[in-house]
Length: 320
Length: 320
Image 1 (spheres, each protein chain N blue to C red):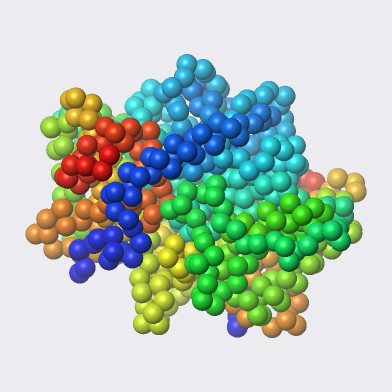
Image 2 (cartoon, rainbow over the protein chains, first blue to last red):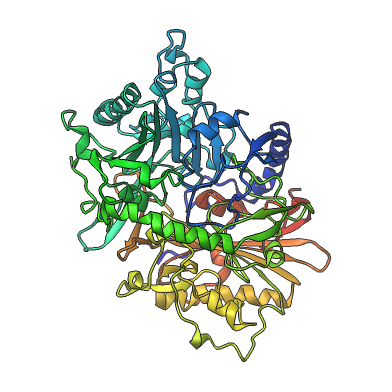
C-alpha cells in the first residue's frame, strides 16, 4: 500500500497551488488572443454538444453561418472542409492548420489523430521549399500543462516522428513548417521504423495520388494491450521527459482513395513502434478498419457512403 | 520483431471488414434516434470547434438559442447548466443525464470524468427510492465498439465502481437508476477501496452540503506513470473483458464548495485504486488541483473567478 500521494511523489512536475492560480493570467491572455482570431465558419448546426455515437458532423450540408471563436491557427475553413469531408474521427481539442487537421490528446501530450487530404498537386515538390529551414517548434495553442517540448525528446532515444508527413506538404514553406509543430510529433523508434518502414508507408500513400484524384489519410497512435505471464491483459507504454509524452506501442494509418468515377477504396494499416525488417511488404500490416476503430476509440469516414466503398484492403466489398 | 498483425493477434475481438460495413445499419438507426431527441439548447455561440486552451464554454452568458441534435439522454438543459456552471473539464463525447454530466473515453471504455452538483436537498434520502431495484445497465448511447458490458466485469475481481455516487442521487428513483449505467462505472478494487476509503470520501463530500449551499464535484480516473527498474517511466494498467475496459491506477475528485457569501473553497484528492488502510485520514490524499489537471489532461472550474477562490485544500489562498 502506498496511500500517501503528493505532487512530487506523483512525479508530475507540479508547481503547486500557486501555479494553478497563476493560470488566470495565462488564460486571460489567451482569451484576448481568441477574440482576435474569430472566424466565420460554415455549418455545424447539428454539432453534437451532448455526444453521439457518430463522430461525423454535417459541415458541408448547410449554408448557415455561425461565428465560432477558438485558438484557431488559420482561417481557411474551405480547406478544412475539404480535408474533413467524410467526417471527424472524434471531436475533442481539434486544431486546424493550413493543410492538415489535428485532434490533441491532452493526457498523453501527443495527437489523437491527424487528418490530411492529398492530391497530385498538393504533394508536388516545390524546389523553393527548404525542409532544412523547418524547426521543431512547441505548439503554443496547447495549454502549457499539456504541451510537449523539444527537451522532452532530448536524450530519450526516440525520434520526433511526424504524424502528418512533412513530405506531404511541400508545395509551400508555411505548410511544411506547420508539420514541424511538436503537436504533430510522436516519439517513434528512429532507425528501423520512422526512417525506414514508416517512411515507406508514407511514400506509398503519397504515390497513390498518381492513381487517384483524391486521397484522404488519418494517422494516429495506438496503445495496444498485451497478455503478461499472469494471463491478464495490460496496456503498457513509456512516457518521456518532464511532460510525460506518451510513447505509443503502435501507429495506424487509414486511407481512403476516391476514384475518377466517385467510388472509394480503403486501406488500413497498423505498425508496431519498433525496428521492422525493411523487406517486410507493407500489406503485412493491413488490418480491417474496424480493428483500428476499436483500438483507437475512433470512427473513420462516417460521412462516406458505404455503398460506394467498393474495395477494402485490396478486396472487393461483396458484403453490401 | 513481431511485424505481422491481424485482428486476432491484436486481441481486439474484431468481426472484420464485414462487421465494419454492418455499422451502416446501426448508424442509420441511430441517426433516426438522434432526430427524435433534438433539443433546444441555450447558448454556446463561442463553442470552440477548433480547440482552445480553455475547456470552458460560455453556456450561461447568452440568450441565443441554437438547435443541437445528439444522443441526448434527457432534455433538461437548465439542470445541466447548473451542474456545469463553472465550465467543462473537456469537450469530448459529453452526455447529460438527469442529475449528472459525463464525458466518455472511447479508447478506455470508461468515463474521462463525471460532474455533479450537490445541495442539501438534492442529496436528501427519499425512502421511496430503492437502490436494490437499480440494475447495472449497458449505455446504449455509446457505440457498441466502445461500450462496456456486465460480462467485461464478471470474474475480473473488480467492482463496478460508481463515479457519480449512487448515494448522491437518491431524491428520485430515475436519478438513482441513471447512476447505474455502465458508462458511469470503472473497475475498482472492492474491499479496501470502493466499499471503504473511496466510499468514505464520497460520504465526506455529500456531508459538505450541510455546510455549503452548493457543492460541485468532478470525479474521474487516472493512469499514472511509475518508474521501473530500468529507470524509465511507464504507464501500465490492466484491461478487463472482451471490450478491454481500462482499470485505472488512481481516481480523483475535485470539489468546489460555494459559501453563503459567494466565495469558493476547493479540495482535490487522488486515491490509488488499491486496498487502503481504512484508518488513513482523507486529507492524506489531498493534492494541489494542478496535479490532477496535469495528470488527467483536464482543466477544472475554468469559469470560476479565481479572485473569489479563497481556500484550497483547507488553506487560505494568499497568492492572489
